[in-house]
Length: 162
Image (tube, rainbow, N blue to C red; front, side):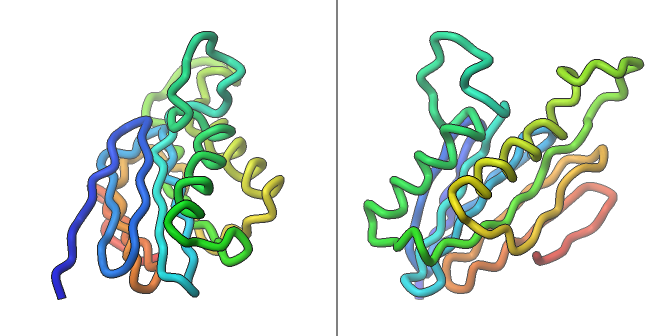
């Protein structure tokens, strides 16, 4: 069986069916949002950069934001045969990559991305089954569409499957 690896860039999303896998590299403060339909073996991955599309005017890249990226990801998955009721989520990223000497909430992009992601998934009734978020280190993730496993690789913090 030939398995393709589909790369998802920053502020982008993609979907696939088994046996292919999706990957995104270099998640710092960005969040990798994975959705999986285990019945139909359909996987989706969005690499979001910012929590809310409402904070930036004139930006039509829906994949860039947690609020619009998740909805777009669901639409793309349903278009290739996923059932929204089967979807479960796994998330990774949302690190605080730089140490700011400030309590300014706006500078805590990673934390804000994670919170916005969780709020949107809750609003859409999609359960988060596992996560690897926070810290001060980057992550690379690979989503396996055959079983929904999410492999998380870090520099200095090892590898794990969530």
